[in-house]
Image (cartoon, rainbow, N blue to C red; front, side, top):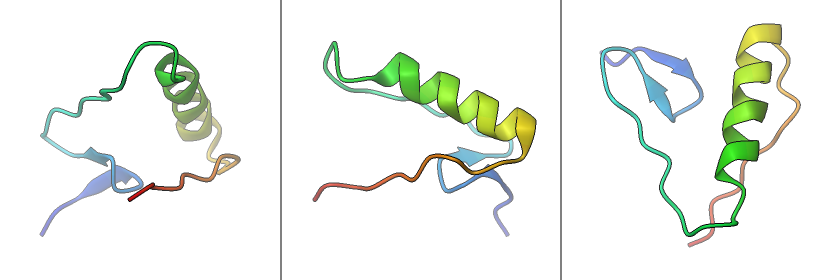
Length: 50
């Protein structure tokens, strides 16, 4: 069984990449996720565009 650390993006014992074009907010997303993980508060909501 897969063990996830934070949402569906971070899985234990696996490498995770955040890939997108420049200027799309990757750094802001990573900082927001780190703060959410450290504080235990889910203050951002992700939406996937398909």
